[in-house]
Image (cartoon, rainbow, N blue to C red):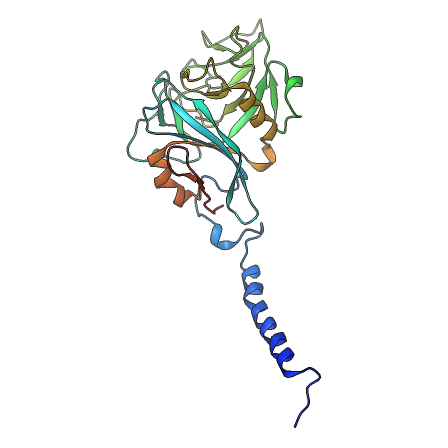
Length: 282
């Protein structure tokens, strides 16, 4: 009889352990180059590549009150909530489909146009932080920062070559716009904020302009198309957001979020505020 160097029960345990390792090795081989499991990918998702996400949810297209929550993407591709959700306000007339990463507006719901008093629904990137005094941010910014001065405006004139852009006016330069949104405001609403890349960079005249995250006038006060919040919430976002993580904002009525989240690999909120259901995806 052949003798084994180990007792038979121990040998069986070693063999079972070796077999158990084989599927794990195959799973590792199937992971994508970024280390994400292949099963978490969502082909064609507007969230592809994003590692940070701001989720703004209303009850319907007409509501102007919303909740905002931050998410980081974990190494396994799931979205993990960061901090608590906060109250925000949006356009006085609610939401309308904007121009962003989500592509053509889905069927159903209004489509945003200039002056409609609605915030854009969809998925959007960010271009720049703006601040009256950037040195007062809670942490060094990890995105470009535009310091707002008396010359800083955002152009809302549809026929202007500078439509939907923040710029600093030059006193002697010719202007093809009138009544721009002057950002050094007496009420300080733009003391801190973020410009949302709605209708950009391929700007369509009349599709809406100068969409920001900014400070609210008072709790519950809606805007004319931006998303507004209290100052601590704004400063937390500006300390957290990181251009290297390709942050996006998703703004949707709850029924649209529930419909699109599985296909997009987006986090989904359940109930009025409710627990978070983490959806995987790239």
